[in-house]
Length: 199
Image 1 (cartoon, rainbow, N blue to C red):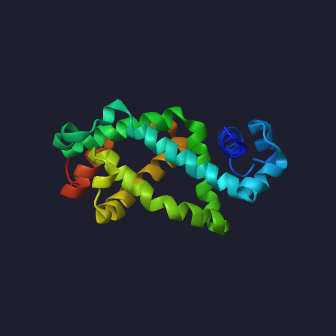
Image 2 (image 1 turned 90 degrees about the horizontal axis):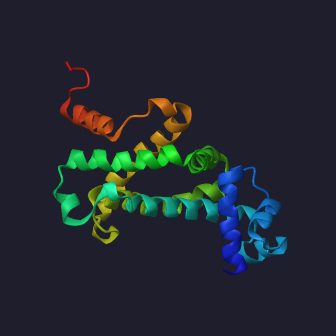
Image 3 (image 1 turned 30 degrees about the vertical axis):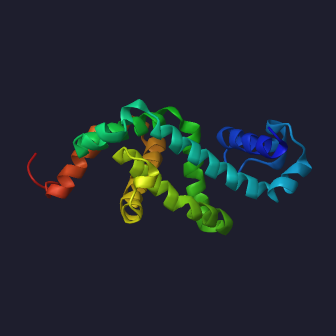
């Protein structure tokens, strides 16, 4: 790898080990083996590099979730009963959330910084639609290229809202996390108007 790639890998490691805000340029240099001046040369600033690190980490995490065997894919995934597929995919995602706490903590930390960091907010805002499209593809078991743009906007936002909430909940009450089946049951009850009805 060249210095640019080394720096990004080092920044991603620091993101997990120290968090977004606490990582310094010197931490990245120590983790990457690059020199301090190379941060400015390749990324412009430490903050720009860290923005790229959070985006790259999120994209890699999303791509790895799409490869989880429980998710399935293709015609078999499309033929599955929608709530069963919904539950199975969420179980796979929830397993990743439970076992990758450093990544989840970094994601939640960044959410808290967004109101006061315009550049970070804009950088994440640029890739958010693509993230929604990716989630729709994973949950529907289809390639990204088959996702309707309107579905990506509406349904992708729904999945993103659930994912964000589950990430926060996993840090607050890890022993009280719902299962994929719980989420599917909740969705069924909400859409059927059974929330306040008899069990």
